[in-house]
Image 1 (cartoon, one colour):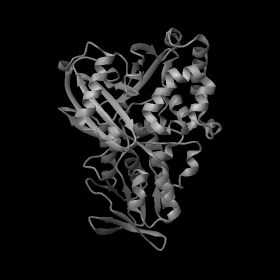
Image 2: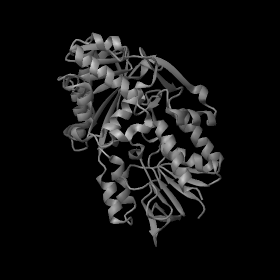
Image 3: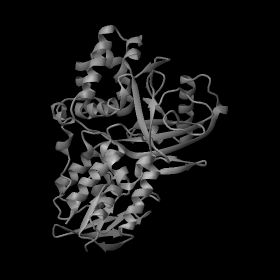
Image 4: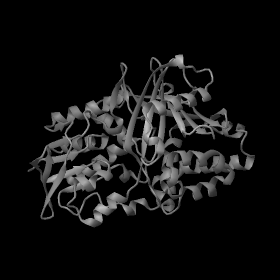
Length: 429
């Protein structure tokens, strides 16, 4: 009964188990999938081990850096100068520095100056000052700061293609945190710089798993937890394969949407709070190509003929034998395209890539893979933290969190590491 059960072996769950192991706490880590990592998990892409969903490192991801130092793998972290582009109304534009903004032909000078100043001040705003934006909605905040014209050209379609019907109810604090994280990852005002782990996220996952097992923890893959058992207001254990396993403490790091079914004995008010958190799903396509689409790492797209908000060319950040391009389709599970076959969505995305780079042909496509995740992005409305139950639940010995609790920060492995440590400290005897 001294053992702790951690549910979910994504970066957060692994970080929890690792921290508890450092404290001498025995841990059993349970994962539904057949591999570690959650959204950072790797797969075999026709001979290439790579993440199913894209990840990158920014210059101020300090919790991640501290963990890499502890694990002795800081030397696996590499930095590269990267470029950003903007595809607008059939044309590819440079983006991401003052000269690119000034040369952008689709905004008047006043709009350019307002946009540039708003982005600059957002990147310089101190992290502790986020609460001043907490009650504001993102669209109104951006329009007020950048102006109506800049919002219409640079943000409106991106929001609609990423957040759909939730666009008008997004937290300004949450959007600001996304702008700030990327905006601060620069060598200078003219040069963006991003990081990656040699060997991908699997390098970190393997190192964490090794430390967990060395400290006496056990990792159970392909082992879904059917229920967290509660008696007299206390955790009594979990149910796995129809049998009870006894634990005095349980930490859940899986998406909140699964909590009501897995822990039905929670008070009704808490179950309702978990159920009300809304999410966007994703169909993420990964292309292996014989030539790049562009020379950008990140390409924002605001074009009436293309229904994706952007593409990520990972091979413009880290070296690969071929060009590696992620094409994410973010949408609610209720969206008609979420029911499309892989062939349908790949066909459409292929046409989009050819539109962006007309030189591309079918002969340039070596391989394509589609991954789907139902709860990829929590929808953070204004004052989002007020909608979440405490991570320390009303049930003694039960702790519950997922990526929603990064708020106002966005999803990143660094935030997973930070929250994992916090959960471990809360659960420590």
